[in-house]
Length: 464
Image (cartoon, rainbow, N blue to C red; front, side):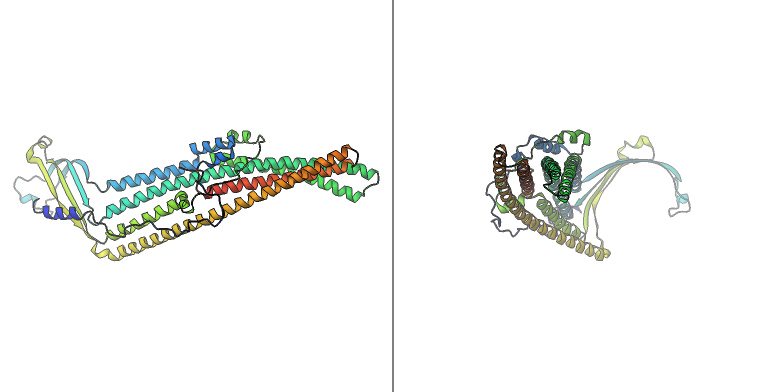
């Protein structure tokens, strides 16, 4: 053992070295100011509560408690953390216990001339109990790079779980807006169908009086039937959105769909959504964090591949008791001991190892490209979402102004009809215009709500 001590000490002193590139987090080139005129201020992380809808809040809280998508992401996270622990354990010495009891017969015609050895029996029993230990000295940092890569992959899995969480929340909110918008549209279409049916009824009276032609009446009847046919489609759209919510929650439809199909108003989106500081977006978007951690893991993999070019040094040891008779196992004369260093070096496989290094380099370059794509996509997605929200907010303001004008016109028509200045046909047509304006307002409100959900998702809100 003293002969090996200098070599072991030298290896231990150099075990902290690590070949391969040291990872440095890339610095994205992003301007500090938004291109779009968003409202400054801290981003609302629990953004779904801004819609002030208790049923939507309950759906999101149920989703956060556990959905199949989140359960799958959680399992991937547990797997990644277990792989990290396994890699970390590889840096420590390993000890294993073993034992055997064998019957042996040595050939007389073999390499050892047992027949010529006095008192040597061809047949004998052999009992062995002991421990084997090994410790690979991380001379070139191979194990260290493996742990580094496993740590990064575990963190990438955590970001992946957050990404799934953000997507599930946004999809539930989006489908909830679809549900309430379809219900509002169904109500507006029903009012439109009632108005068109009334126009058709009045047309039949006017046809009998010779005031209109049969062609005009046929057109009025066709419009009434088309309006009535559009109502069931809106109901089907509402039901489809409810079923999608049930699928996102991973719950049987009978638990989720019936309460959702009770009509309720469309949640009003907030007029102002704070967009935060532009560079902070890159720390909130989970897909950027996942891509950055995958790049770190791929960079560490290069060091793992490069370390295979160099010899591996290990310290091996074996201690136990060996005897032909079980009663002799506890005797000190039955003790066996083996200890010493060893090394292995794949001298004649350098071509394969270098190819593996090139492959690791290529994977790191691909990971870097994915990271750059994630950053560019997040910035463009957020700018576009801000633009859509501002446009939807302006469109809703115009639709509300149009509705106010139509409501005033309908009020005037009611007063004129009550005073006998206009017939009922003018009043029905005014009501039809009011219904159409109401539907346009509802569609604009739904567009604003959907664009608000998209903006909140683009800003990376939804997890802490």
